[in-house]
Image 1 (spheres, rainbow, N blue to C red):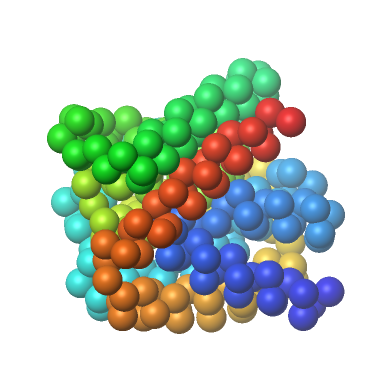
Image 2 (tube, rainbow, N blue to C red):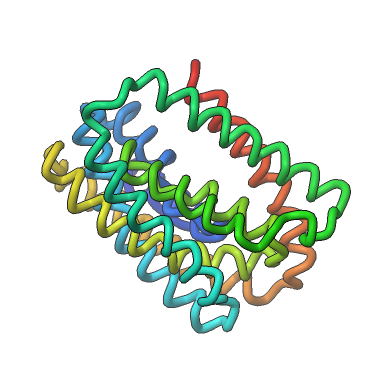
Length: 244
């Protein structure tokens, strides 16, 4: 089990940091489906596991010069308070209502990302201020469900015109702050499974440290062309998974 968790952590860390996310949904799947943790414990452990890999991956992204702090700061303006609000109301809102709302939004984001991938629509079709909406959605996902919130952030940054390496770097920077706040709140609601979390963390740290350096050696336009439709498909699948 220990070797399996480390290996899965490596795969998630490498894949997710290249996609600009924190891996919350993937870690939750492993923690609930394989480690058999309760949802509350899995949410807290997921954020605990993802945070160090995010820090390492963000530093690696920073060294590549792809990080766009202005976009990240705009996201945080709405994402930070949304994380706090989501954490405070997570115990009182109907689960079904939240589930369907997030599923619909993720589905729409996924379709928009796929359309941009195949039709190459100009980023001017999306108003710059909409970055605040993506930030708010990301914060709510972290606060309410213990997810990383990376999906909406990446979709928003790509639709606003950043290429894949830039969006991944900027997203990882913004998600560090959200993960810290989410971890503080969720750790009071569910116990962290330290052993399981540390095993996943070891693997994810290695993957997160390596992948940004690999991406830096490829043409950003080609990377974006390949990974952006994958991001759209993942968003659609995540939306479906929310309601089945």
